[in-house]
Image (tube, rainbow, N blue to C red; front, side, top):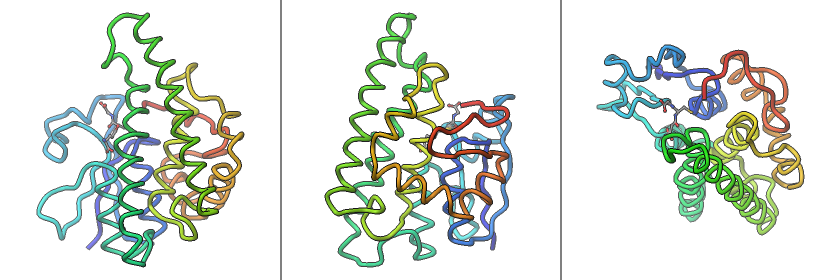
Length: 232
Ligand SMILES: N[C@@H](CCC(=O)N[C@@H](CS)C(=O)NCC(=O)O)C(=O)O
């Protein structure tokens, strides 16, 4: 039976949509209108009481699945795809997936929603500077990891859900917060990351299917452009 993905264009659901398209999984996508704050509606809170996207409904599960990394791991396991098949590499998958979720993405969320973490204009500005520095360090760490095992993907020779998550985070880091984002040149200075992003951008399941379905075109990961009506 098909999955249901709750989404809003270019929100964290894009990571899940890339995975679904790469896996060739059947799914329907239901839009949650963030311009209307529909993610906080009573109807949506039944699916995720945090009021956050994405949510995946898998009819074989007893409850909807939320948290991007949890959904990715669930799908990778269900489809035996986008993960290393060698059981000895399980730890590598888990450690980088958790890093992306609880450090990279978490820092990005703080940068996108600084007003939820600081009060005055001064403290918001200071926090953003701090987070930009952390983002640069995270990207350098990921570049070093790829250099250590010679890439081309984050986990080595095989593409995984980690690459999809990483690519979306790098995209958002260059777009948001508007006027205070990571400069594209900082990403382009990292050759292995740049090559990974170029390769992903050229994959039909990513470019032509996942992003096209959310109305997003143009460069996706390197010097990306804003979608039509973005709400971070
Ligand atoms: N930890 C969550 C974060 C998801 C998240 O930040 N979702 C954003 C969209 S990119 C959202 O729904 N924001 C709505 C809000 O904060 O009101 C996950 O990994 O799924």
